Image (tube, rainbow, N blue to C red):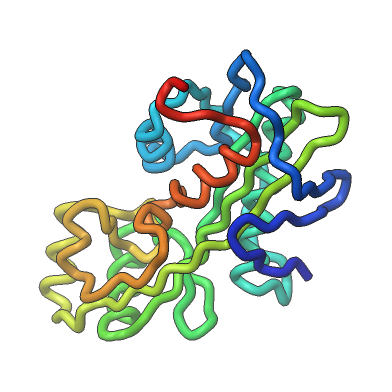
Length: 224
């Protein structure tokens, strides 16, 4: 079962190899690909002012039997990156996946109003753990190099009445978000507390962790 690496650690998976040496920057910037259909991740990555492309991976995102939430998120983040790298060899590919859990039970995207309301009713007054897994797959060498990390965020949801939860959902309609709330939007009003070492992790792409991975892969920032 995959372990959760600490910041800066590397894992060896399948036909990928790990490295503890930072790559030497080259004179030509690498082709950077975001393996995601999420508009939220695209908006977050745009903050880094790096040129990048978007490619949508095609894979089954269901959890495997007996798989922990962290293992699910880590596996899918890497699978997304690997699927895109297979189509775009020689690239740096970013994959990310998020799994929300309440009492160890995975919470998916609600998809509609009724399911979203049920999610918020179960979550109110309680703490929800979000596992946001990040993978940077470097396909510039003969054998791809992988960096992975699981960034955890603990969210405490306000104990609000059904009327407020229902009204929020009708305004923002966050039916494509695990946990049924957009913390970067009006959803912040139904949250009581957010505990995380990376404030962008909850939205879906942990930029602090990603910047560290990109630097280790030889990517430079600020045009220098």
